[in-house]
Amino acid sequence: MSFLIRPAREDDLQALYEMAKLTGGGFTNLPPEKPALLAKLERSALAFGRTDDALRDELFVLVLENSETREVRGTCQIFTQVGQRWPFYSYRLGIETKHSEALARTFRAEILSLTNDLEGCSEVGGLFLHPGERAGGLGMLLARSRYLFIAMHRARFADGVPAELRGVTHHARGSPFWDGVAGRFFGMNFQQADEFNAIHGNQFIADLMPKHPIYTAMLTESARSVIGLPHPSGRAAMRMLEHEGFAFENYIDIFDGGPTMTARTDQVMTVRDSRTDKVAEVADGGSASIIARGQLGDFRACHGRIGLSDGGVTVDGVSASILGVEPGQEVRHAPR
Image 1 (cartoon, one colour):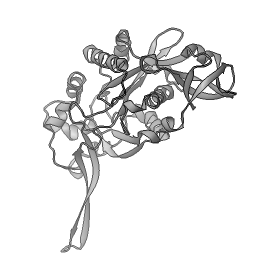
Image 2 (tube, rainbow, N blue to C red; image 1 turned 90 degrees about the vertical axis):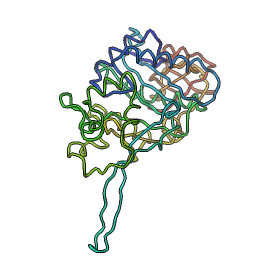
Image 3 (cartoon, rainbow, N blue to C red; image 1 turned 135 degrees about the vertical axis):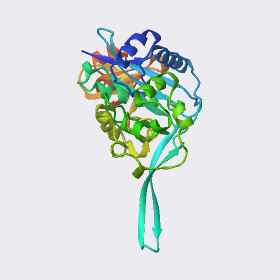
């Protein structure tokens, strides 16, 4: 069974909606609301349709498709420049140090400060793989296809790239971080806030949250204990990000306290180590790779095999068929 990554289309709406209903809530980039998903698809279509290289506030949505059945089984997103329509807020976890001469003691307090440090960066997010396909490295294919797309359209992306991971939530009790911090100022529980966020975005949190630092010692133990921790379903995604060169630098999501991983775009492993080569021939054999071809709306990516050849590289027959690649055309590839 083979899969490919391609740009999402408006006729993918129902498939995205069905996957969104499986997320369990708190997955802000894939809300189970058809109007919100359709707006994302329409915005993505505009981004794929623009051919100049100017850096703007855009969204690219990609999907994972079974190349045999044509079923959509996963999705991911790339935001080119966050914080342009409205401020992009994060909490920064820091330390405040005070010293008392009278007591001859130094006190260190952990604080959360509202910040716009990541404004202007590109962001990778919205990665979801259907539970029935969570094997065979398909999550890795979804994740790394974004970095190949960035490498192949580098001028359309910023020099920094964060990735927000969903924080810890409890199906019955909601979000401990929300209940301990933001929920105290909004008069709504996490489920209500999650539903509102799916339609209107999380700007309402930034608008109404106090702007002064929050001392974590004043939070409940349940809220403190989940600061910077990913949802159990996001632990594998966090490991993949770390493998690509992302690091947790004390930024957390203002909504659920999940970790925000950051990297310099050109230092992301797949961006840095991938290469562009001409296809010399279609031939089996070679090293396991992730392979991509095409610009913008013609972008396609899949797992395959790349071999060395005089005048370029070889691409295995299955991958060449999935990607529509012929000798003489170029591919971008990185080792698996």
